[in-house]
Image 1 (cartoon, helix red, strand yellow):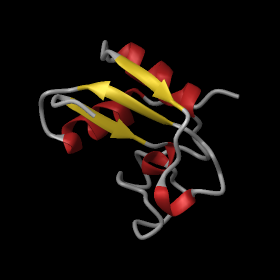
Image 2 (tube, one colour; image 1 turned 30 degrees about the vertical axis):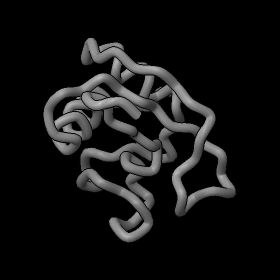
Image 3 (cartoon, one colour; image 1 turned 90 degrees about the horizontal axis):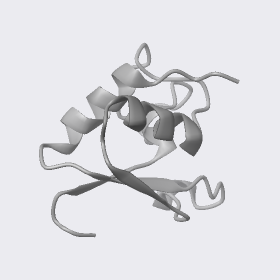
Image 4 (tube, one colour; image 1 turned 60 degrees about the horizontal axis):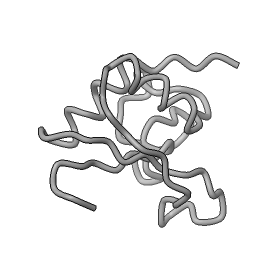
Length: 91
């Protein structure tokens, strides 16, 4: 991973998870079972350049949910908050 990149996993935004399970946003800001395509839409709305990788969160290795590497030069928490604001799960 190069400098200026942040890794995002869907579990960061899953309202059903506890903080210990990997959630990094408030439950009210989270989504129910977000997937990579949900994060992809949120990042496009936020005009953030990114790429999708076929990796998994170390604590959730059995799910194989993927991850996003975003170009971001500020703090990771500010990116997570920005994505959470733009996140809308439509299925």
